[in-house]
Image (tube, rainbow, N blue to C red):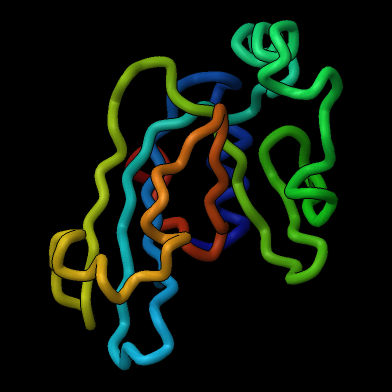
Length: 154
């Protein structure tokens, strides 16, 4: 999808509603691996809400699970271009959508590919870098604009 199309769709989504987003990206692999591993993800998140006003975030700040005040995005290398959903990486210039985890328990759908052919995770896990194998946690997630395939089926 083109950046302009993504931003137009995002601006027309009511803030805080569960939004289905799909993206496909190349995975980081060990240096000696010669093929290409990628993954396609379908996730549900909420766009356009203020992280710091979320009840869960406030509770975590009150009990010490999060710092008392907000910290810089990605340790200072991220900045909002359009608050609260579009972030720019200050070193690479890449743009990211920031979404907050959905209100339900819908798991992400992930499909791995090796050289364009569908494979399961166990078929590629030995060539993936450790950072690719970690379970993601936290209250929000980011998706690189260049990788977005669709938003709410559009």
